[in-house]
Image 1: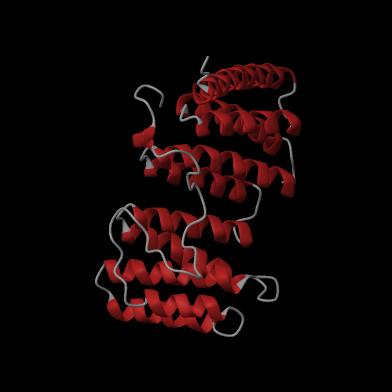
Image 2 (image 1 turned 60 degrees about the vertical axis):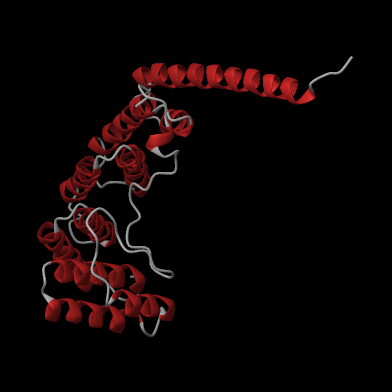
Length: 261
């Protein structure tokens, strides 16, 4: 008798995936239940994060978002009880917002990505950290989102504030790459508005910032200095990452079955 081993393997794989999915759902509900009794527990937040990632990888964005909201609630509760804000809490808060922003971007909601960054910036300001490396980064990411959304004026507002933060920080402890990215984004925003002299000034400053300590960034800046951004996307060039927040790591939305978002 001939045995269709390929069919059997597929059947076993499908059954295993179903078991794993049920286990993930049970773990998710357990984590949600625990949050009610341990509203500031980092381990509970980690469980919720894992559940959210699992759902997102399956394209079950609605459930993934629910897990992300529960996780964010843990970090909100911790942040509200801390003065000053601990670095661990900030990172957990930022990463929870990043998870939600990934889903927002995956389903095409750029304004929600910006809302996540606005909340992160408000957290820093509330804790007296309006001028530090984290606030500079957050403002820079807001500028990148606005530029991607085709709003160069709004992008420049955030990027100018980020630039001011970077200039106030200790150069010995600040990565010049981060400031260079801010200046490149500002140059692209100026170019989108037809402000070519201002764009050239921003690109030249980016070169000066990166030339000595980050030559690979300087090379990327030279490439981008002649680029006019297209609405809906940021230029891609080796050696320079223009946006870091809310980048989806899940299936493309058009590959997700209808009704799962």
